[in-house]
Image (cartoon, rainbow, N blue to C red; front, side):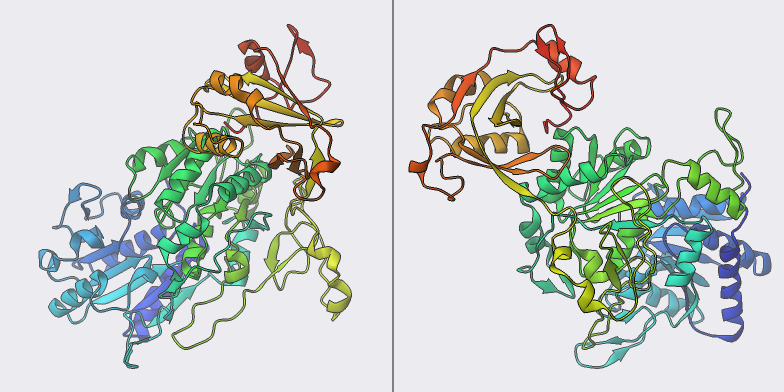
Length: 628
């Protein structure tokens, strides 16, 4: 496969040669995620050996996927490159080649194995800690002891460090002294607002659409350490079943037409819980984190389309390349702009289809031209990537192309340069005049912001409650119908249909399920009885007549499938009225078991509706709103 370099990649390689002609330091190349740093590495190595064939070079990083990716791109560009891989994670330990792609954890204690090295390139250079005791610093120090003329080049999409400012700035130690950074200068940077937006306009990246969400994770009581939330406290604060389920239900609504979801969790347990819930909601989901086996197979299944969603904790923020990702669900609050930008970068890659060759008689696109790239993106299923930021990171840290840059210790940070569109409720940069967010219809918003000084006129209280904030309504229950419900492929459950005037709301109790569904069933029972929780659906049905019947419901109504959020059992309408003002209460009717054929037919039909036909005396129902 012939690789034609992009203009900015050529310029990045040229900037390194221009830098070394007049400078003696260690430069940094800053390029957004998805713009091809691996090609820049490959082309620079090829040019080095064209002029200096006896050099010894190491390319270091921390993720095995990046090691493999960088090596493969070099071999595509330069088929006979004298290169090898030294990585325990990849089960390869080749150390006698002129070019070595290595994992820092695999080589940190073995500098003498590689001997005299002339040049080190570090991918994801923002992870080089300023502490002299860390693996990178110790390894580079040992190499420099063998070769004082060693040069180091860094490549990153985020040229800063949490709590230490820019990657090239000296580090202020606890005693007030400064330690110089390994990196001294930035020789090439296309991560800013204008170059980043240009990459989008030329079809090299696709835009992110950061949508405000109704559900929000609260971290007011979570403490900070080293400028970031303490992970154990963070997971405890956000890993709540009710909040997580509400967020995932909202994500299902807002992302109903999105094909590949990448989800960031706040801990390993949180990641497991999210994956369990999504699978019960009918979304095929995988999960990867440090305590869970099957990482490679889960990632492979996600890339192959066998999984619609992939949940992770501290695994897929760097080195993960899947262009098809068109929705990012952020359930991970962070104070780190580096982590935030790295997370967002997973969604900016275009999903090019039919390049140059066509498909099934479709059009071909020349990706070497701007027109071809833009046309290819327009014909693909991904024109942008929706970001559902439940963690409120957007307001805290800003957009991907202009985040709040970390300050050095003692310096105050700035405010996030974002504003919210009053029409589509997407976050945009403060300088934007025409909003390019998405309406619920999928069309571009087009709202025009006014820059005149009319803040008082525009800040009416009506805008504080507009949009998709939950609308809760209380309904009095007239009667309840309970029945055994069977959904194909799942254990049986109890379906409760609450008739409230002309409205009917459904609830499912699942004592034979596991994990979240079981916990919900147990909680439902304990709210109504002190007796042991039934473990079988038939047993629960037989005991329903002994339980109090809900007299009122609190329902989230402004969503596609209204959701029962709470039930009142005492006739007070959640404390709004006296019990004496209420009559004897609603009745409970046990309906005879329905044939399994109804659930099967339901899986083939559209949304439930009162006009649906009757099949064999059973109304065709829709299982899509059943969460289990």
